[in-house]
Length: 419
Image (cartoon, rainbow, N blue to C red; front, top):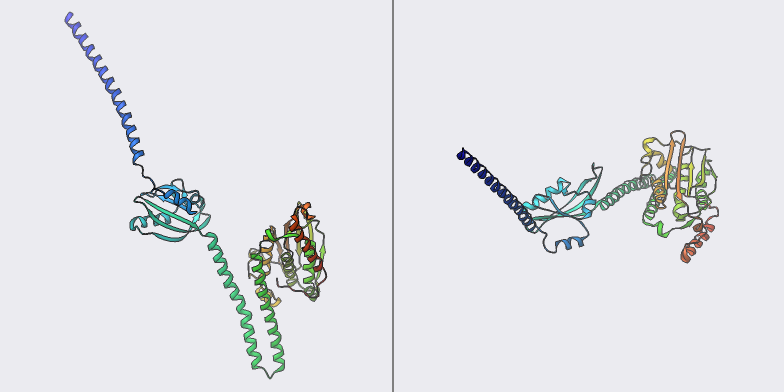
């Protein structure tokens, strides 16, 4: 019996010792694991790739969007411009076209420069034109420099389109003048033919002169900064001047020009530009209206906005043509426009002038019923309307303009219309 008890006590003692040893081993193991993790973390911090010395400062001074990618095309560094352009999202380069360039540089070690048009936005609803320069940076990185060329590309496209349109428009009257000159020379003995062809020659030369004048006016409108060069302008006098310049062509077709309303406050702008814009709108209404009709000009003011409406009883404009009516050289009826002397630039000039003055121009039209152009311009505050708050120089300029407007208020003996 005593032997059995001694055996049980020995077993319990061994079990207890084994438990204590196991617990000690577990504690030592956990401590070793934690020490290993700390060492591993410390090792990662030490081994993390770093940018070449001075590279960050140089990149910040370039003034361009930049992206630095590692060996697996992960974004190591990018400035806010790269995110604003939509080139980077999170730590990822968005466009595969850019990654293709980094891959080529990584393989060849040769600097690449290309201009790409890339989709922009979450759904690619817009695009951005960027000039990309991709080059190795140290032994592990690839640098992508991006220069936004969107506005430059748009301007070049507009300029090329404008030059092409001008060339085409000039070619027609120049060709007609050349052909008529040859015809007159061949028919020198026929007085009636010479007289008839001379009249057509005169018409084509007038058309050419009107086109050149409108091109010059459009160039002036696009080049002048109305915000800085403008002064308080009385729109009542602008409309009166525009009507006087359009009265002769209106009387030739027995079209009545009827004015209603009065504007209580002035606007900030350029008197000559606004006169040209409203003259173009009135001339356009007269040109496309049948004889013995009426063109109405209405003036109203509400909530600090001056509104001018010009309504005719003409042929009207289709919904399809409304979308393009303000484009340069666009004509609803090209044949009719050439017969009436239109250049296709008048409404484009109107849009530019009103836009430069911080306003807007809208169109309502129904075929067979006529059209209404509505121009809205912001009015000056009461103090500025009285020339206060402009400073000495601004007041002198405004007073000079007042004298000019007063001298221009007399009825004109001639009228011009090349809308």
